[in-house]
Length: 433
Image (cartoon, rainbow, N blue to C red):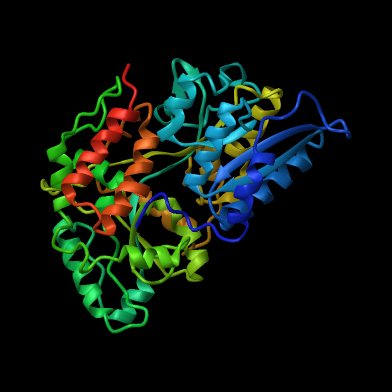
């Protein structure tokens, strides 16, 4: 159920080893053909790569003096390689940037200030100011939001129909979800392989953030200090005590399926993740019968959901071609033909002009994601701003999900040690101002 485990296969695995050669800043001139060469890298799976390659081909057709070299990897591997690049002063010219890491990279002088290009080769006028501000660090425009997304529960309606279990109503609670997981797991116990209702949602960092907002707690202060206590985390883990280990998807089976997960392997009908993952999972499951539902309601009956930039584009400060890099970002964010190719794989377009021009097929995943974000806003579920991302946030999130959460899933640590380890990670990684 990890939000951060994208199902990259085949080419995604192969390129991890080649990133050292391809994902670095451009040289100090053009190639033998006189073209400027840009390196562009992102995280994601094969479906996203296919869309991006089409967009890059289109960009090169319209800008024959620029060549774009591309690479991608799964989310954890992506950031490991970016750390290596940063150490050697070789960040890509253009890179996908996550809110969890933008403070860290900007504060270390690793990202180029794009302010000089705004209003010229880089048009940001179609992006909502609040969304655009997510790319501003120390009064510098170091990121340009690509799109927006919000948390959702993805539902495999075909699998639920086979099991004879109905999805919860939209106003369901965490307790209702636990009951649903139990019902599904019992219904799927005789199948081979077994089907479980879902994974242990408490090991998903962003759901913990969502839980804190439902308790009226802003996770981090503007200076980076965390506003939650060890008891808050203990209480969150306790919400799944009745289903953990007996009714949720086993960690052992998850390792057997890797890089797939329970949901996109067809062994669980639900997963909490970002809404823009819908198309990628649909491609992997080879079905169009996936739906989106909001997160469960908190104790006060409200969702307390939020929109955030799903990702941003940044320029490595070591680039030799900032002007051309800005042109590529402008194309990726604003070009309507490129937008038609990308659809909602990256989220709902942040550029209003591109969103308005998006031609979506009825019943398509693009329509479902756009309609989902429209509905949760109209229902009044979006009441919070995107939480502050403290410097070092990304390392804590990764350790929470990939290391501590995995050990918890194997029962090699208990809840008390889980909490202790997370707070050790906060102390080690979060940098306060």
